[in-house]
Image 1 (cartoon, rainbow, N blue to C red):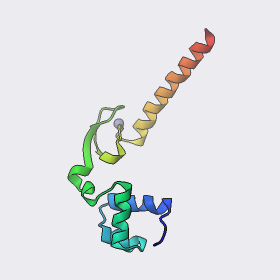
Image 2 (cartoon, rainbow, N blue to C red):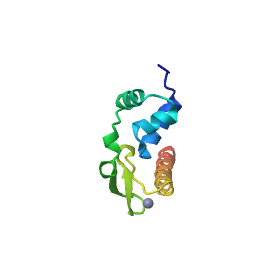
Image 3 (cartoon, rainbow, N blue to C red):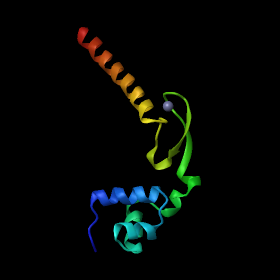
Image 4 (tube, rainbow, N blue to C red):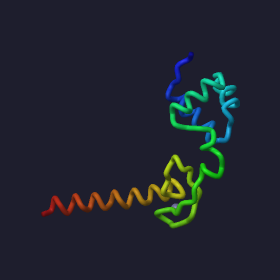
Length: 105
Ligand SMILES: [Zn+2]
């Protein structure tokens, strides 16, 4: 059996998330159906997890409070990278302020 590289594993998960079946993924990665299935089981993924209904959940963005669809396994709390960066930056500013005030006293 061919060894899986980290890159292949990520590729595999991406393909599954994009709605490909084990068979399709097998063809794309040049591996057998069984090998794909076993690898995904090992990684904690099942094909059922990736149907539209159970795969996505509605979440509210912590920054702009807009509702968005989040992939459950990704556990996102922001609607976009921009919102995530905005919130992370504001947190960073707070930490810096804290440090500054500490050093002053
Ligand atoms: Zn947002």
